[in-house]
Length: 335
Image (cartoon, rainbow, N blue to C red; front, side):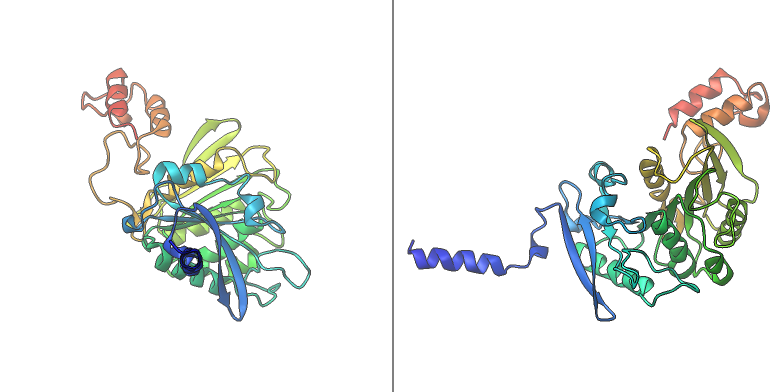
């Protein structure tokens, strides 16, 4: 083959857009919003095939951080490979104070359009990777978690479920919140978090106010099911109501401003139960053994069964009492 022809092939190959070859699993994309280049990091799971129309988990980094830093401790990549979803890490712009910080809605807004960026990014990811528009999820840590509350209030109709770690809803977000649709919500917070005080302050609302608002907006049950899961952590679940949207809070007794080890997998496990209509298969006959009605049979249900021991409250085999035979029924339907 003549040398000039070989060089021509190399040159033409370099002109082929990278979007046509997804062999590279992690890469950056940019999109222009209001004349500003915005960036997001994309991770495609092993064996990615756009024909599958996979769900997407977006994660918003903490204040003055970046996708590259955040992915070191909020790493959805192993879960993406295991469960088959796309992970996307949006990047905040540098604000007028020189901080790579998310611009929330409210009195301290600096004019950077984060909601416009999010909407454009969702459209771009759906278009480029054939992502499932009915299974878009988002989580965030610290200031990124505060951003997620804005998503709940202003873009809830674009997301199936949302999760916040070490963050509360800003007071001004709460005052103006007008959700377009119910959205499954999970939030994880330590009782000693300096950024998001558990009982609130003049900038953010308390966890109790937050739970009450999310429950009301989602039409969830108002009575919670509280389950200690160890390590000072308690799961506080408000089961889905008729609209098929639940709310769950993980209280970390004594926990500070960080991402606990269980957060990433717990958020995915919760969020992945939802599509745009709410909990998947909600309205079908409940799974035998799903005592807390969260759509799965797991350790939380086993704990409730033991609490109901020798009473009819968790009688799964129809013999009138809760006993070892009911444990067998529950384990048969595990997960």
